[in-house]
Length: 172
Image 1 (cartoon, rainbow, N blue to C red):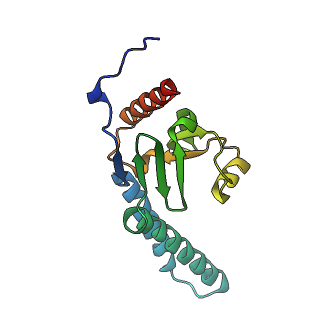
Image 2 (tube, one colour):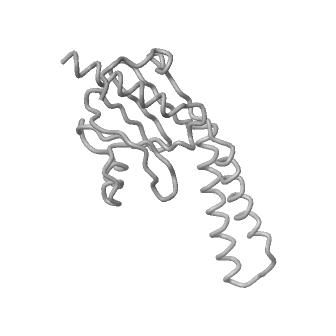
């Protein structure tokens, strides 16, 4: 492999901050789900099964509506990349990892969702969400869903991370 330096225009200037911006298809998907579940509530009927179905559909409409609102407005995810660390915040938590601790990253398809997965040496206690990921067989430390960051060029982000990790390893 050629150890030449990557051209600077192919890298993000550090520090860089990316705010989450949903892709249109994610807005369409969340909006459709909220409309479908809300629409089921208006189907006529007055028996106990219909009341239970209405309650369940209202719960799902609220759940997807909350998720959509949180991703789009209230708790927007963000990524911060500096010379020393990589920081990622999402709806359910926050993760900061030193660049020297990252030993692998790869694009994965997890249940039809494309993510950029990061494997890093353990720093501190595992969060509830990391434990849950391990329970379901996901062995990465954290992952960034591509659909939540429409403004990031993920190939350029990977090149930037690899360049900075290599630079830190050379200094050590």
